[in-house]
Image 1 (cartoon, rainbow, N blue to C red):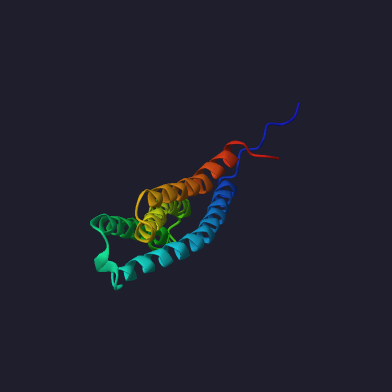
Image 2 (image 1 turned 45 degrees about the horizontal axis):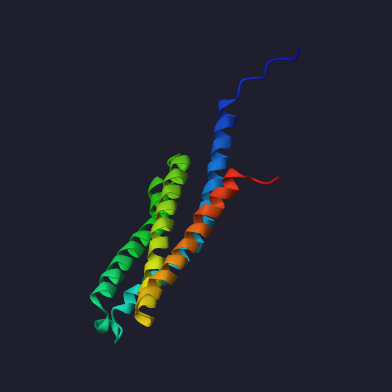
Length: 163
């Protein structure tokens, strides 16, 4: 019969939690760098689109789609850049786990809005280039592909890990 395990040293447990939070935060920052670049390019494209010569010629549906896409992309930008502000406010207050949770929630929300923004832009462009049902079919396939790659595949990998 062996001895019971020694109680965990609170300082060691706290260090492990801090190290884990540091690692998770660094991973989150790496992921956000990729997403931020994408949302910034899309947002810049949408901001300049209204100043092109052909913009006054778009249909009322295309104008509403443009406005909706611009707004969700703006929201995605706020959420994907938000962890920077969160870090500035919470920095050096011993709240790293809270920072990681908040940043994770912002990243998830930002990616969901970015999915809508990208696919809204795709539908807008397709509807200008080839008005009619094919624009919606192709945009729907694009949306399904994003959902598959961004959500279904990762969830499947999480639920059925391979050794």
